[in-house]
Structure formats: structure tokens, C-alpha cells
Length: 323
View 1 (cartoon, rainbow, N blue to C red):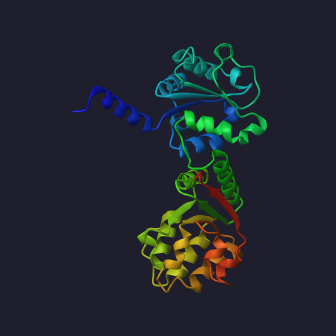
View 2 (cartoon, rainbow, N blue to C red):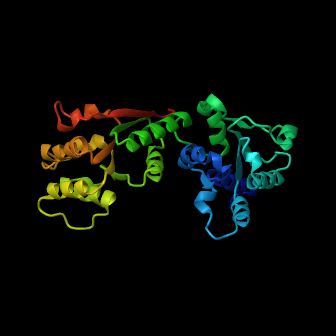
View 3 (cartoon, one colour):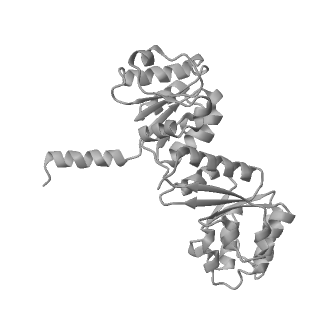
């Protein structure tokens, strides 16, 4: 039977590996930044985010919901701007956080300065280390590393690089520009990045070419139609014609194909020029399809010379890991 000290150490390690609950307090003038920058980074890094727009229910008292959500948190992340202190709700959340850690000795409060402002007297008095993301410091790796470390989050890559990749991919997709997403290194949170992209762009369908459901052309088409259209029917004999018909009937389709490197390994002879001609037609001629190609190697190197898809105009967004 392990000694108490050994048991205590094991329990501490277990607790440290559990996702921390992060309560984010912010003024709604900063909601776009919180939703498109702070939330995606922390969530993708493994933090459990407690935030109003995800949890609050219509018809229930706001203050009661605020308090109930905040008491669940391990870390209280306060996004300070001049507007923040003009909100009774924000000030109430801040005071509740300060009351839990009055002398800032427990590390429960994480002040993040997004815009220059007059800091509360509690912070001036105790001088806890706060994170400065004002101006160009929004792209400061050291500042973001402080946030990630305190929140127990990790992306396997620089948070700034991860953010740039996320924003670039999202903008390309929103502008209906096909894009190649390449990842270098192990442990990079690229799946979590795709998850955040899908939250920002719900119509995005994601198909993993590693899976058995994509082994043949017919299976791949069924999977694409399923995730992009909710297609439940049985494909007719002329599967490619049905694929084209369904996508032409939709306003637009966004499709992410991950592990595209494995396309060379597909043994089905029906992965032929007809299939790729169809993709090219939907993308370039009809402008009905936008692709996100996920791969280790650049997209252009994965296709034979003069391949039907090699003529696609496609920007490459690369994300490198820490290692």
C-alpha cells in the first residue's frame, strides 16, 4: 500500500493533468476578440472554458447565472479595457474574483490588459503579474505563453503562429478560396484548429482520408455528401453524377480533406481523372465548392505533373510545431 506522501503526489499529478476551468470576464464590446482569438486558443489548448454565450440560458436571471458559472472556475481571466469598468456586470465579476483571492497568493485571478486603462486599486496594491496584450503585443509570443501556462493549455506550437494559421484559414474559407493547410512536427493541435474552424464556419464538412469510409471513390463520395449535406440515400450506379447534382443544388459547399498525403495510396482505379475533373469543375467553373486540403507535404508536391487539380489556385498555410 503506497505511503500517504506517494498517494498525495500521485493525486497532485492527476489534478494537474485535468483540464482547468477558465471563467472569462469581458465587456461585450470585446466579444469578437474573445470569440475569434482568446476562446479558440484556450479551448484548442485543452482548457475548459466557462463563458456566458456558451452557458447562459434565455429567460433566467443573468446575475444568478453569472455567479453559478463563476464559482465553477479554477482561473478567473479578466479582460481589461476602459469599457470593462463601465459595466456593472463586469465589475461584479471582477470583485467576486478578487474576493476569492484577496492578496493574489493563490493564482486564481489572471488579469489580461487588452486596451490601456486605469487598473483597479487591488492590482496596484498587490501588483500581480498581469498579461499585456495592448497594441502590437497582441502578437507577442511571451505574453501568450504566460496565458497558456497559467490556464494549463498547450497547442504544441506557438500560440501566435497557431492564431495566424487559424485566422488565415478562416479568411480564405470565408472568401471561398481553396487553401492547403500543412503541419510540420508532432503534437500540434491541428485537429483542434479544424474544430474551431467548424465552430466559426458551421457548414464546413471534415473528411479524414485515413478512415476506411474513404477507401474507394464511392465510399468517399458518400462520406463527403453525408458530412456536407446530411445525405442519407444510397448512391446510384452513377455515383459521380449524383455527387455533382447534389453539390450543384447547394448554395455552396466547404470541405476539408485531411491526410491528403494518403491519396496516392488509394488503390481504387475509380480515383481517376473523372473524379478530379468533377472537383475542379465544382471549384473553378461553378464556384460551388471550396476545399481545405490538410497534408504534411505541400499540395502541389502530392499530385503528378499536369494533374487536373494541379491548376487550382491555392494558398498554403503552414503551422510548425515547437519541436
